[in-house]
Image (tube, rainbow, N blue to C red; front, side, top):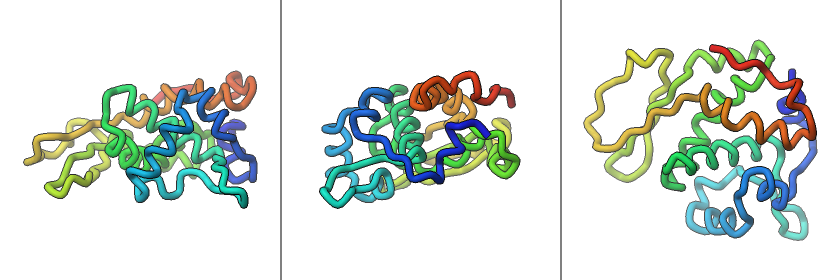
Length: 170
């Protein structure tokens, strides 16, 4: 297993400045997201006794997914909801562990807006199986491509672990 995923259960933390440096997400942005979307931000980061936010590696990966979705023009509320849903699929592409690879079964996720503004999700093995939607807005997420996009940022966090990262093939 590459170091980027080996640390997921270790007590190591990243500071907000690390998130800013590696993901170009500022503390002000994260603070604004917490204020506007408390339910969607629940579980991303941990506060210490002094009230400062810190991030475990798995929080960092979820924020990296959010960053990729935002750079594709997806609204922050949708990006947060999608990132939470696709997290395990993306992690499976970053792992050599056979148990994690089971999540690769669904390479694609379709997210569509419900009448109440929330998103619903449909995990797909094959693009030819995309269901018909009666809603005006849907997103197609390729979890393999998201993993490829965020891997360099994760490797940078690991201080030179890029040579130990997985080879990407479906």
